[in-house]
Image 1 (tube, rainbow, N blue to C red):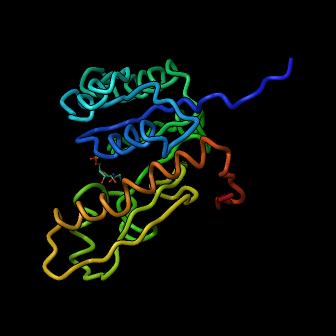
Image 2 (tube, rainbow, N blue to C red; image 1 turned 135 degrees about the horizontal axis):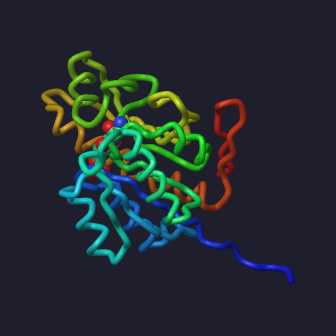
Length: 215
Ligand code: GAR
């Protein structure tokens, strides 16, 4: 029999902190800005992450997999991959997940794992650039334009194919915290839901480390 309709894209969102990007995804699914998508699970490495409360409030299954609970990094890596696999996701979304992704997970989810980074890659990215540090570095360099990037995750740090980027203006007197908030509001919370919607609707393909977006 011929099947009709598109099955929902099952996504797992991985978090470490406040979870404002997770909230933007939840809101996007609820409002219909993100279609064909079901958030099937949220995983945190940090049991105190407020992001887990957000998952709970929205009735989304969640769990914590912390390196602290395992004897070695290898065992943690295996357990993390197992936890992800149990949700059987079509797409993994790293939304402020500040843990190095195990190589086996990168291989298993090639072109099915995306990350939001709070800069215009290739500026202010790579090892050591995460969270507020990115904005501190941008202000220290005195750049006038910053932004955010959604990209597929590959073996490098912030080196995978870029899906979407959005620029944000730096203003006189910005602190790292003020700039971080503006980048979230004007860029991250917009491009991450948009990227998920595009992928869930089959509009993104990867060719030679670049993406082609069918708008
Ligand atoms: C976001 O700004 C995200 O871009 C950043 O962590 C923050 C998480 O905030 N991610 C990275 O720096 C990854 N290298 P949230 O928990 O409120 O979404």
